[in-house]
Length: 209
Image 1: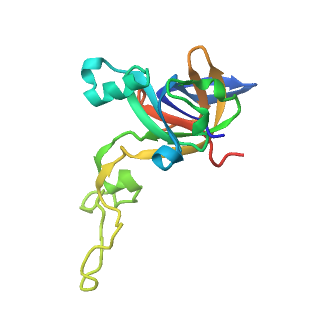
Image 2: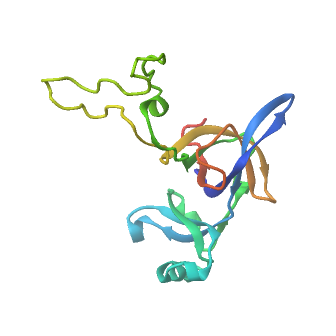
């Protein structure tokens, strides 16, 4: 059964897997209270709403406060709806934590990549660029972007300067190296999207064996 948690990227460190040094990302995953359970009969599909962390009551809207209060949960800072066919096994007020994951298990991480601002094509798409010597007048520019008389316009999806980063990205089949259930920590092999402190979604790998 797929299992999903909301968490926070804390940073990277290194641990030993036997005699091999492995770079890992530390994620604080959960605890995530369930705010609402949706079923096919009531909503047309099966899903659960989970929350993560809490925020001050004065910073929450009236709708947010009442929605959480209705299900006996403190107003969460982040709410995410997760599709699951096993929604009938959950109830509002239940708390999800890292104990359902196992060391060695494969998981997927969904996060927002770091925003890099407006960048040129050399940094954004690894375009080669022009000669770097003096006098060329063509160093980091994009060069030709289309044809002349026909078709008379730039083709769609032409790689050009623009905003880089700040997009949702999914990294699949990362291995859990270690779990600290007391501190709600998961140590995952490799890097994940986002900056330290960003909220991420941790789920069982949908393609992992």
